Amino acid sequence: MVTVADVRALARTLPRSSEHLIRDRVKFRVGSIVYVAFSRDEETMGFGYPKEQRDGLIAGEPDLFFLPGVSDQRFNWVCCHVARLDHGYMTELVTEAWRMVVPKFLARQRLGS
Image 1 (tube, helix red, strand yellow):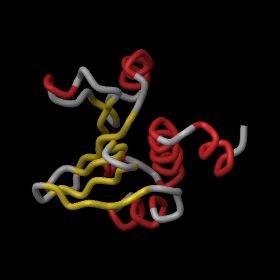
Image 2 (cartoon, rainbow, N blue to C red):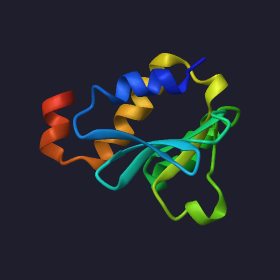
Image 3 (cartoon, rainbow, N blue to C red):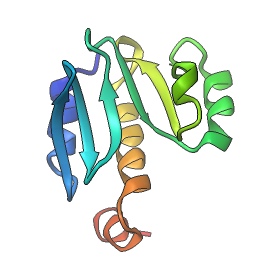
């Protein structure tokens, strides 16, 4: 099972990433753009994800992924149940969410291609 501490450890290695506590919710962002956020109880995690691909992600693993609340569906965002997420998958999702919000040159420096 993934925890906030696991995401924090990864986020600390990502350039320009910072952690914030906003309304009792842990959020990770680059500048003012949030790329990962936990629910208050830390049981769910939202993360940046392309809108045009999220229906496929959710359909592929409906027990793990779900849409955010109606007001947040306009954003590039999807949510997951943290208890069902393994560490490798979390690393991929958080890193790709971070990649969406940083300049391309910085993502290439960190991740290649």
